[in-house]
Image 1 (cartoon, rainbow, N blue to C red):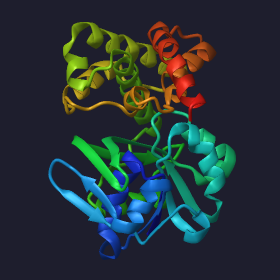
Image 2 (cartoon, rainbow, N blue to C red; image 1 turned 60 degrees about the horizontal axis):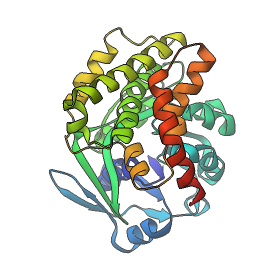
Image 3 (tube, one colour; image 1 turned 30 degrees about the vertical axis):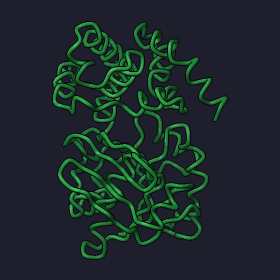
Length: 313
């Protein structure tokens, strides 16, 4: 299977490294689509993945900033930031053969619809990943903790041959992957956790361990999760009643030094995924008639920082 990693950031780099390491021994050919200093470092020295257990250095079959140099692939795993999804969809045209499909790995609940608007619904699966991974330096990805998974599925939850083929390939590369019974539920369960933790963490400027141990910020995270639970149900996504409790248990298991990508970007003065995270909760809440006071406050407090980062970009 020929797989393009379009956007070799924390998530794309983590899972791309495992696929590149599997290589021809597992019937995998991996293409990295990256840019700038990160691409130059990968071309010169390979991609290094640093984990608590080991350090992996891989060289993909091709690393390029020009999708036309790669040609058609079987699957595109999309690892760009949420605000880059539509731009990436237009740029990936040379990667698309007759049967090529795209799996977005973005945080949020709108990437698949954005891709479908450009590429057509038949080319797009719903997808998500769980990982605390970041670009530590050009050509180097650092992963924290032990939870690193990829979930995906057809929009109608049929188990198709193409989805099963990708599942086998990911697992053969050592990646924990699954096709959930309801991909929409899985997507919103992650949205509930990541957006709440990310928004509260960005405002409080605390890592995971401090965020969950402080009673005030822990209560804030829970309140944010409850708003997303209500929003999901209003939008006919059947999140289980215990979704908040399960999410709280999950964050208690995460590496205490971990932070969300939103929190890191805000702290570093970079453009962030605020609009696709807390901003989306506020916007979708208005559309659905669901009050979102916690997310509204988070969004309003972080928006000036987001605007400043984009003006200086």
